[in-house]
Image (cartoon, rainbow, N blue to C red; front, side, top):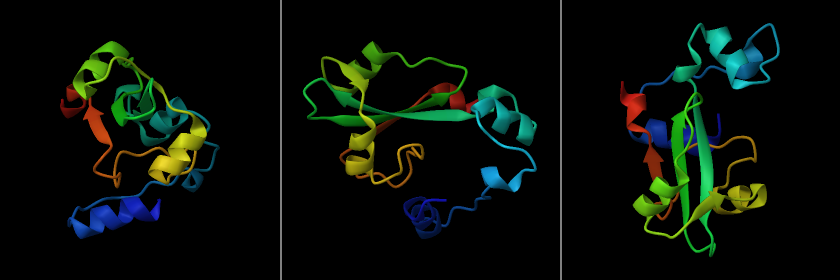
Length: 122
């Protein structure tokens, strides 16, 4: 777990259980592998996507189930920009401080809006 994530969880008194990909007897190479290892449907596994405005002046994080598609137009409207696109991998590392394949919506700078699909609350 990235130190930024554990710091936020501990500071806020949030109980959590870390499940490491390398704790399984087989390789976890996809979200489906992780869902199967946990005995979950793919709907319970989320993806976090780091997005930027076309002008690169606004960054947002979008979180939804692996089985759903992001609505870029709706997210752009919510973010107050004309268009959003997936940020480059290096922008993720530079702006968020997480490794390229370690995207997480916890512990971000307050200037980065996070949009979470309401369907995840079900």
